[in-house]
Length: 127
Image 1 (tube, one colour):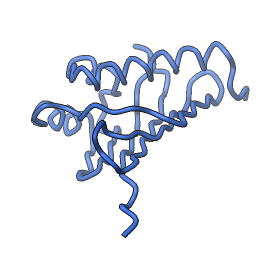
Image 2 (cartoon, one colour; image 1 turned 135 degrees about the horizontal axis):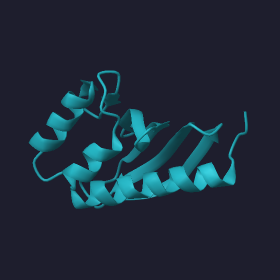
Image 3 (cartoon, one colour; image 1 turned 30 degrees about the vertical axis):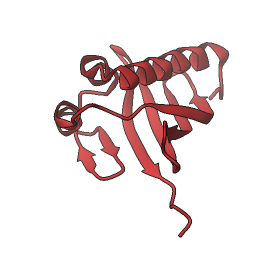
Image 4 (tube, one colour; image 1 turned 135 degrees about the vertical axis):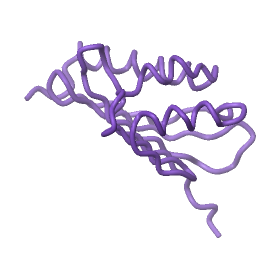
C-alpha cells in the first residue's frame, strides 16, 4: 500500500477544499454530494450523533443558517492506497474563542471521493 501518493493526495485535498467551500456557503446540495449515500455513513457532531446519510442530510436541511464562519489550522490529509484517506483539521469559529477539531474519513466510490465518517468536536474551555 502506498501512503501519500501525490495524485491521491491532490484528489482528496480538492474534495476536502470543496467541502470547506460548501460548508462556508451553506450549499446543502454540495455537502450532500460529498457524503456517501449509505446507512453506514456517520457523523458525530458537537451536539449530535448522526447515523446514516438520511440523518446527516436532514440535519443539514434543518440547521438554521448553516455552520458559523471559521478559519482552519494544522490540516493533515493522509492517503492510504488509492481508495482511502483521512482529513483532520483544527478550526476556530470567527469571533469564537474555542478551538474545534474535525476528522473525516474519505473513500473512493464509483461516483468519486466521499466522506464515509466524520467527527466534529470543540476543545474544552480550560475551566
